Amino acid sequence: MLVLAALAPPQPRTLQIEVEAPPSLTGVASRVRDEVPDLQSIQTLLGDVALPSRVRIVLAEEQSQAGRSVPTWVSGYALPAIDTIVLFPTRVPSYPDRNLPTLLAHELAHLLVDHGAGGRELPRWFNEGVATVAAREWGLEDSARFAAAVIGPGPGNLREVDEGFVRDAGQVSRSYALSAAVVRHLLRRGGQDAVARLLSRVRRGEPFETAFERTAGLPLAAFETDFFGREVFWRTWVPFLSSSAALWMLITSLALLAIWRRRRLDAAQRALWEAEEDLPPVDPEPSSEPREWIH
Image 1: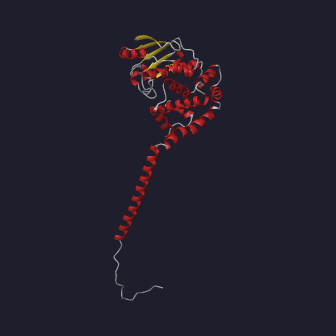
Image 2: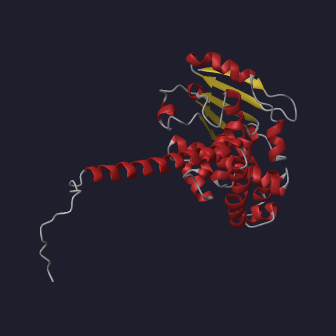
Image 3: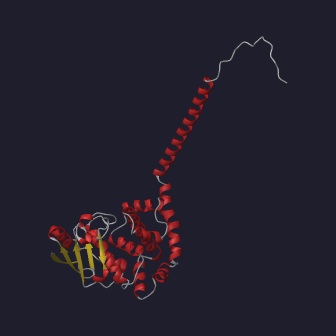
C-alpha cells in the first residue's frame, strides 16, 4: 500500500492529506497529491468550519471489496466519522463529478459539511446539494439535467429528491441536479452566506427545519412549494417557451398537424371513390312496363 502526503494550498488554512493506493493506482495517487483542491471556495460557502487535522484518501480498484460493496455509479464517498474519503478513479467521470479534482472537492465538501453541522444529521438533498455547489460552478450539463428532471417524470418534492439518491443511475443524476438547484435557490433567497449561517445554527443545536426557516425567511415546506412551483416555471418553462427551439417545435407541430389532416381528407376521398365503384350499374332508360305499387 502506497502512502503519500500532501499539503493543500496555504490559504485559508492548511489541511494534511494522506493518500493510500494499491500499486496499480500509483500514478493516480500522484495526481491526487498534486491536485488537492483549494479549500477557499468550499470554506467561503460553508463559513468558519473547523478543519480536521488530517484527511485520509483511499483509492480503491473496481474489483476491491469497497468497489463491490457500492453501486457501480458511485465514484466516491466520504466517511466523516473517521475523516476518510474513498475514491474509485476508474469510475470518473460520472455526473456530477467531471474529473478527479472535482470528485475530490465534492467529497472534501461532505467532510466539511459534517464538521460544520457538528456531526448532526442533515437531509440528504441538502448535504449533496451543498457538496455539488461547493465543488464546481453550475454549467450547461447541470441546466440540461435540471430541465430534464423537472419537465420529465422526475422528483416533484424534496422527499422524492432524497429517494432518488438510492435508485438507478438516471434517477441519481436527476437528484444531484435538483439538490444543487435547491441549494442555489436558498443562496439567492437567503444570501451568499445562507449555507454557512444554517450550518452554524444546526451546530449550535437547532433542528434543521428551524435553522432553515430562520435562514431562508420562510418555512421549509413553503420554500419547497416555491421552488417546485414558481422557480421551476421561471427558470425552465419560460426560457424554453421563449426560445427559438420552442418556436421551431411549434412550427413543426403545426406542419405535422396539417399533413395529418390532409392525409385524413385524402383517405376519406379515396374511400368515397371506392364505394361509388362498388355500386350496381344504373339503367339510363326508364322501364315501360307497368309498376306494381304497394299501398
